[in-house]
Image (cartoon, rainbow, N blue to C red; front, side, top):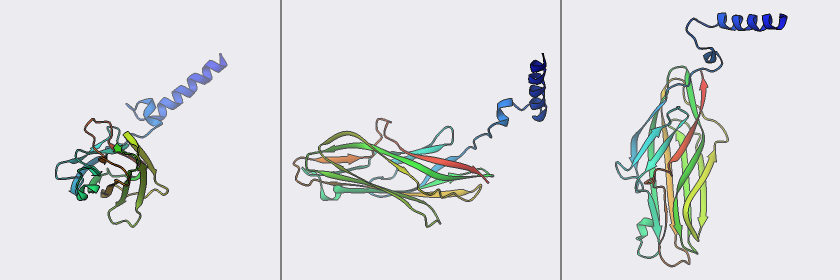
Length: 208
């Protein structure tokens, strides 16, 4: 009977400590803030106007970049100018008062069709506008390769934005294909036509 009384006392003490109308589970975890993202500038041979977009995660843990025409190719009948494609995006990240965010990690995805003897490079860097801290990821691939590719980038140091502000994240991505000793056409893309190869950027959230 004593144990039962102790349990009841603990429950009542917890309930009285909460404001009226507050769910019990809300005391353990603050609500995740609503963070919105928007492309405000896009330049480069890999992202013609209207071919790149960003979509925020529903839980505000990050966002996805979707490219519809980001393809580099070499060999066969490919033009010299198609060997290297790049895209520079400026993404406006809007953060509520009392919060700040940093890019914790990124997952780059795409498709490649590399002939034996061909190689490819994916290079991505990003930084908050006004900050000197730049994160860069280089990844190389060698043929034969046919299908999806993916790389991960984890920030060694978290660079946070100003609290409760609108901040611009600049993303620079480059694809290169070298035919090497191969015959035929080799290609590498960051296209998301099938909806399963978005580039993912994951936030680290903190209160101010």
